[in-house]
Image (cartoon, rainbow over all chains, first blue to last red; front, top):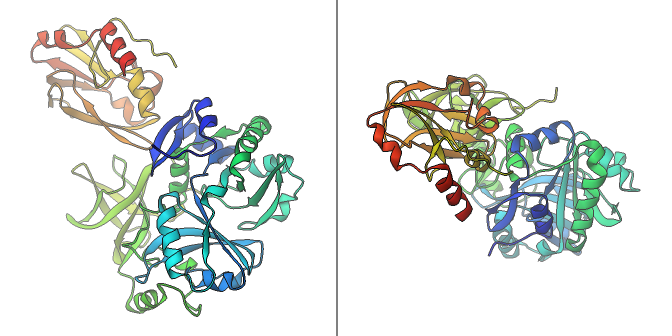
Length: 360
Length: 129
């Protein structure tokens, strides 16, 4: 039996098409993936992301404990700020990619991928030196409000001054009378918030956002639009673009790896890889022939397999067939060309600047 | 959305339809199929003159999320393909029984269409699913 978020019944009432997503019964679309995608780019969309997990580290030494587990550096941010980070293994490859919230040096809160909830918690429990992690995954629902009209919508429902919450910052407040963590983060490339609340309050918050958002053209959005939006931004998806076989440097996520930090799991491997040179890189490309690249398709150069597509779709906003994949470093510069093997056809592709989507 | 199933077409359990015009049939996917697929963004068509076989894959239809195979309802030679789908694949969503047609096939044996489902049988299949 698939797990259900507190909003499961609400999705069904809205006519969502439900699918099994890593053991969760989740909406893949309500009306149309493209329509939902467009709503987020031009107005505002709501996503139920309650299947994401949460882990809390609380007590003296929490910041230091977490800092030794993650690739980014919590000492460089202030209370009320969050960072995107790698939870890496000794090889410098990913256990998961996570967002880490610094409430205070003694209170650190981590959002993890739904597919990795149990694995991450076990990993943190095993490797945390100092403060012990607490699995808070069942204590929170999470609703992402994303799009150019998201800020206005959330502001009308809260007394918190959201203009003071900058990107990757957060505040505690009430939205629609629901106690929430209001986090200016997201996975779409648009401005917006991720709202964490108690599971019992999720329906109240969801309904209030849908009702108040009518004037903004709000749409509930499923996993389909979530994937096309993040692909147009070249945001990595765990299990597709990043995994325990590719390092953070290969994934092009050097910016979340602070090699000057005293210590963290994976640092030695990444220092060595950086010195030796990174041999393959995750790039964004457009196909210039006919077809759509998809996860798992081979990348060929001069007829020989050299890499693999990790994500691909027809980008609803860029209106092109776009892909993400690992290629040898010598094929990673903008303008490099190779072929994608689409059902036996060699379809030409060219490396382009990412994100694929740029705001008009 | 209530699917209206045209009475003048033949159907397969893979949710393709066939419009029989003598020795030639026009082939497409049903309203039910396009709705299940979601936004169609790409259709890979067979080549003109290709032989396609009943029950076998003859093309591919892709939505934003997924790649699905197209199975031929009949055996014969492809005499026309709907090239307009290259620029406007969403026609499959908006007009599955009309402008969203996919290929036209000249039948090797005109009698084979008798084996396909009529609208009533297809309607029953959808109800039982």
